[in-house]
Amino acid sequence: MHVLVIKTTSLGDVIHTLPAITDAARAIPGIRFDWVVEEGFAEIPAWHPAVDRVIPVAVRRWRKSLWQTMRSGEWRTFKQRVSETEYDLVIDAQGLLKSAWLSRYARGPVAGLDSESAREPMASRLYKQKINVPWGQHAVERTRQLFAQALGYRVPEGLGDYGLTPPAAAADAAERADYVVFLHGTTWVTKHWPEVYWRELAERVVAQGLQVKLPWGSLPEQARAQRIAEGLEAVQVLPRLPLASITEVLAGAQACVAVDTGLGHLAAALDVPTLSLFGPTNPGFTGAYGHAQRHLASDFACAPCLRKTCNYQPTPADAQQFDLSKEQPLCFTRLAPERVLAQLHTLMSATRAD
Image (cartoon, rainbow, N blue to C red; front, top):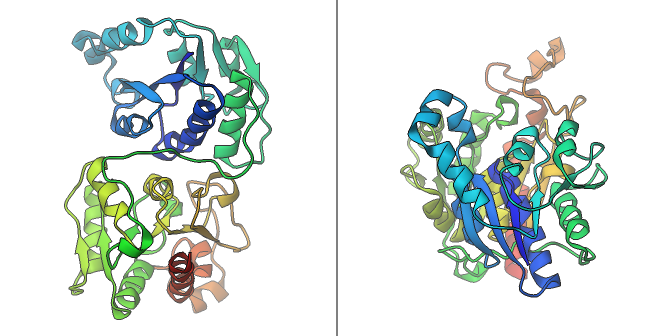
């Protein structure tokens, strides 16, 4: 059986799809997958042994310059590649209009979430097989259920298995180096743990005899990493690294501390002990999924708000208790550095005991 998966973005969403691929490969002997994915994440599906062909798209880049996209022939090349194989089934695992639109160019019946289950209900109109998957579950479990219904098997019990075989396989806990990775970069402004907290945590971790590594993916992230590391010899700002090299760094770490970010999900897929910090978002729906994953979620009055912009108006009491110029958003004041360090020690100790 030959199946095409369409799941283009984001990094976390792509990673969340992998356990469903593993389920299907174990349930249906001989099943093989191709995968349509954004060009920046094309390495990830290729690390799964059940995926044969990765078909990159560049929707994010293409829509910025439609005329150039048409002139360059990139769109024509994509349509040729996605339509050259007759598939037994096409699964739109994204449930968006853009992914449903891409599915139109594939040859084969298309399955996807129905209008009650998809993030963009209109997308379901383009599917032949419409599947209901209830909300209120983690994204990994919803995707596992989508694949199981589309392909006709029961979701296996227990935690899903990412099934990755990346170029740099994760080391056993006993073999990992004495460093912790801080995954400080994320997309929403509201998901950023305050920089002053990262700095204090770095000082505390270094005082415990560990090193800290700071990856970055943009100039603002690089500048933040440099400020966090300033004057601390045991804190290393990494050079800008491709995804495979970041994977190698993550795989060798004792642990990671992360905000709600795609690299945190990659650490989970590599089975690296990770402490994830949540303010406006809900770890029950999109938290790092896997073994040795712990979440610290704010219990601030308005959390989780699921907003990209903070609408909370600080009170006079807040102004007296916190430095409003540095400790924003205030939901993260519930996750102070000393609490995070205590949880990190607990996580690392439990991992060593296992």
